[in-house]
Structures are given as structure tokens and as C-alpha cells.
Length: 215
Image (cartoon, rainbow, N blue to C red):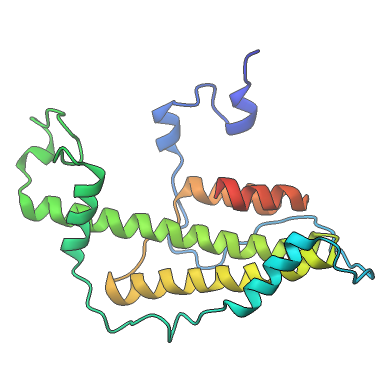
């Protein structure tokens, strides 16, 4: 059986690099992004908490709240260069740089020294953490959607605790990027398309799947 990737992702070859790179973020200065969705808000008048695993998770969440402003020491200095060197050591134990053993002769990278490579590593780290932050906001919106759409009260209770948790995640990433790394990058176009698809789906189960597995 042949998978019809064209109808799913808009290209025949899933690894078509040219098609992938042709998708770009044209709204880099956009601060508000709206996603249209036709979703039913589900009320339930049955307040019986019959799903014991969810009840336990809800009770645990109520006693395990943390405060990003006071439980983290924001006065700690961050050596950004050491951070990226540690990342390189962990991700490339052989000591290979970004392009490994690729011959860079004839490219602009051939003229780069340690200063340029370090700056690229710093910006790459900031970009990656920025995408984590945007993804966390996607999870924040998804959990709020689940509270709205799931039909059981105990599921609504627990999903509500996840909303607060995701809000803290966004808060920490945003503050860390702003105060310690000098600012964030806009959302990647492909990540935004994924979030749009998840939020635009009217089924709460797809919202949950998208949040927990894909994002």
C-alpha cells in the first residue's frame, strides 16, 4: 500500500528538502495568530468522579504546584558559551562540529573561525529553545481546549491542572530566553502548521494526541 503524502503534507516525497525549505515564516513580526475551529463546548451535569486514575492525578497535582517566580533562582548567572559547549560535547561525543566531516571548501563557512562558530552555536541554541517555548504555548492552548471539550468531570479537573502547568512552562522558557539569552526567535513555520492542525481539529482526542505525542 502506497501512502499518499501529497494529500497529507502537500508533497509526494516526505524527504523532499527543497519542498520543506520552501515553507517559510512570512509573518515574523506577527504577535497574534488566530486559528479557526468549530468545536463544541461540553458541559456535564454528572459530577461523579468515577475514573480513579484521573482522580489520583488531580489530587497529586493540587499538592504539587510550584511557582516559577519564587522556586527558581533567577539571579543565577548563565554562561551561554559554556552551555553550548556542553551541548556540543553531549550531542557530538566525537568532537565533530555542525557539519561533521563535510568538506566546507568554497563555502562561506570555510572562512569562519572560532568566534563565528560559537555565535552560530549560541543562536542555534536560542532558536531551539524558542521552538520549545512556542510548542509549550501550543500545549497550553491544547489543555485549555481539552477542559472545554472533554465530556467527563474528572477529566476536566485534571486537564485544568495541566493548563496551569503548561502556563508555567511557557513562563519559564520566555523569561529564560529574555533575561538570560537575550531574546527569542519567531515560531518555525512547520511547527506553526502542526499546531494549527491540532488546534483546528474539533475532536478532543485528537487535541490530546497532538499535545501529548506530536508536539
